[in-house]
Image (cartoon, rainbow, N blue to C red; front, side, top):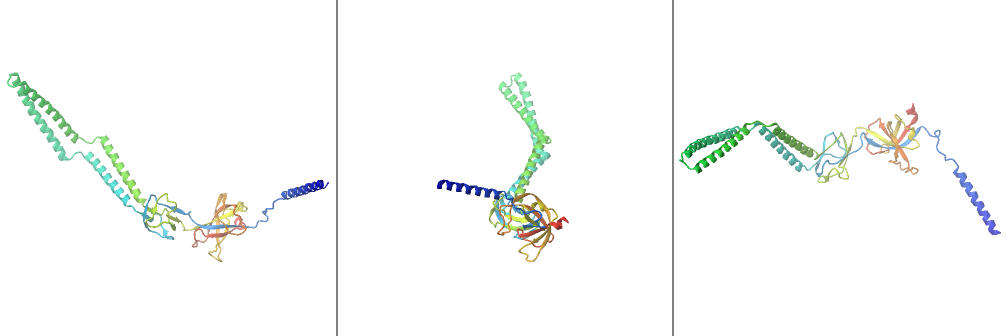
Length: 343
């Protein structure tokens, strides 16, 4: 009997607990309604330059010879920031320049033809061979008559005939050589030499580019934010950390992060009040100039105990009305005024 009584009591307790859990699960979650939301949106932000931070690395590997700038220095676009050892690249330029000069000289020689003294020489050699041939020809004619009269042997006649044939060939060779020296350059030969000149010119330009890459130059006008290398250190395009970091600090923007609940209420032109711990007692004005079209992971926190670290935020950019001497990355407290922007 006691056993059944305890079982009944246990079943009753389970049913009561189940009912209570069901009631609590059906209780609606209380969320702030639009009527409870005030006319201000609070967000955290930070100072950013007019351009994102630009990380500069060497265009080609080398050891740093000298660093020409300092952190905080303002530079112009194209200004040299540092140089690497460039002895090898200078010799490449000298070699390419010499090869280009040789190619141009070869083309000029082809177009101009042989030297006048060379022309005189080949002409004289041709005439000498021709005279030798004529003399051998006369000798052959005399020997040929003597052979008919049995005055000379047939062997001597054959030797003279062979000499005459050899001299005839030498005359043709001398004549061809003279005509070759005196002939103008053929079109295909000129094209070949011109192609060699172009190839040498391209090689020289490439060597000059490599020499130019031995200098790290500023891509824009701006301020040097960080120099992370020392003279004698090796740098290159694949080094893990940039050699120089810079940005355009001629003006500053505030990049703020708005929580999910307030993200749909942000609009362009909205007025912003900005405070920074580094400027106690001062408040700066600005207005929203850009909105991110999507939510993203939170990147900046206020370090408040009640802050949520797993939320997403909408990024907005605020243009400041005053261009004080801000520090890139400085943390800010941002208040967006809804009523002023809507009016």
